[in-house]
Length: 236
Image (spheres, one colour):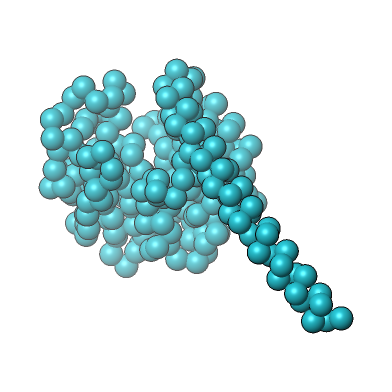
């Protein structure tokens, strides 16, 4: 009887497995198409930040956007206090940083995107709030502060003021991590960009006004995008 049932299960698996694979392929194709449609329509929406849920749907080949979560999580100590500035839809705070941090404070200026973040990525140790990060007063101390793809949206004075403010809000041994795209020619890429960077050295020089221990590296994305990451540490 057991042998008979084993043969039946084996036969069924041979029939069902190809159909399962076909369904997975169709779902993947549909998700990819849905992601492309959203990307085209997003520019006409009233959301200031891209909703990364659609990056998941775009397929396994679209993995570069995950670098912000993975790079941010790598140096994060267990039980850390985190500040995520310009958190956007909240996916990195909710899915990545919250798994290791004790507390995560995630801030963005757009109330609509904060509402979306609370709906999709709320966790017991994550607090999402709306504020202009160039004007907020950082009274607490943090072990890690993140600022991914945000610094180019501010004027030089606003950006330098924010970097200085972040350095004063870090605990001893804390770090400041972020990124910004690099452009061979500045201007004309995004109407919201007020201070674009062309080289890795420019980024390093920009944050060196408040930090002396700086590591930078470049990630080469599809379609010619170069993302420059920086990791600034305070001495222990």
